[in-house]
Length: 100
Image 1 (spheres, rainbow, N blue to C red):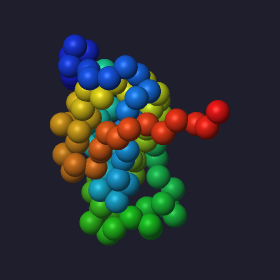
Image 2 (tube, rainbow, N blue to C red; image 1 turned 90 degrees about the horizontal axis):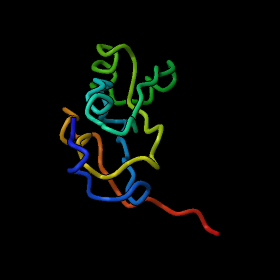
Image 3 (cartoon, one colour; image 1 turned 30 degrees about the vertical axis):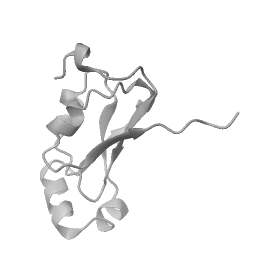
């Protein structure tokens, strides 16, 4: 888990993005994130069919789940999720702001 002192931005400036074609659902990002930004969700049969076959096999090993960004506004860009992800499926990018 990242030390909160390692966080680089105030909340809401950056947001994590998950490449679903690479996420195997190991849950390492869920454990690593000090702000509970991620959760694991079970994938439907249709969602599994849309993944590359190698990813599907690995997702099934992890209980047919993938990581989901549930609380993007809480991200503080500590990048613990990036370091923890064994497949490099996570990137942290500038958050988009809603139009006023």
